[in-house]
Image 1: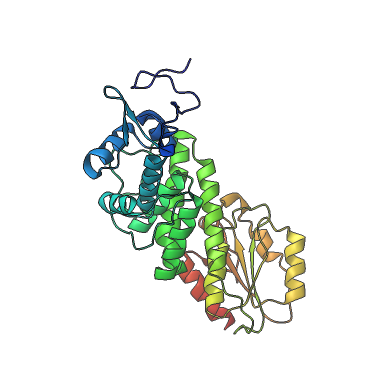
Image 2: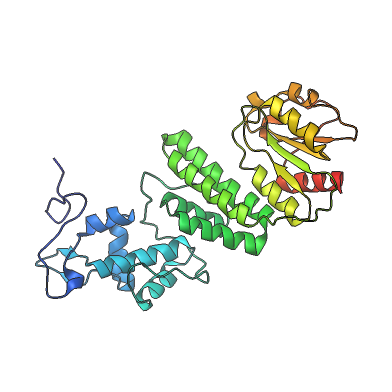
Length: 335
């Protein structure tokens, strides 16, 4: 049996309804507990927003019961979107109160940047991400990811790329958020869906930032591929984006490329360089490097990814680590 909330009523399906009033905006009302579940925040946070900023229910029933009308909830959702974009609580509340509320909600402007969520708020599905040392953009992406707000994640990533570039966004935003999500999963077993959502958003944002190189500086292409059975190919996309921005032509061959397919690609394209990515140590097979077919012109081979950190990289292949040094090394080798 569903336990009653603090108003003394039992919500059905997470919502309460009352009879329609004269004002259609009050035709359906929700309790504090129902709105808190809808937004993924603590009921105490809603009371704080009401007390500090006047973002409370417009309908007060008998006694201490507080009912949120649809327009009340819409303003709270608008405030939450502003918070996810990095606005302070005061800025977000000011924006929510000043904006016309209608469906769909207006897009929160990028100028709302700054502060933190109220301390009483909590994301759905457990505790938040541990991002104390991360920058403001990373915290915003982390909050949006836990709220499963892919639009906000993509917008924040696009803003970060436009302001700081792909390398800084990858190192200071994406990697800390992904590491925090992985740590959360190791601690609680939750968050796989959050990880997948962030990966898809990162992929979309980075692809949009990757220009099409019609006249590359390198006469022979650069092949980017994962090792056989390695499916973690996301890091190859920011590398491709940075190289493309520098006028270097690349060919993306994707995840888990079979050895025979890799060999065929090398023979057909006669690349200037090949980057072989291994995220996990079990896929960092030196035999794949030594088995690459010989071509008439020299092919520079780079072994990238944390999977190679403790493995053997056979000469003349070179190990590359972070995105910045990888992009520099490949560019020097082929240009």
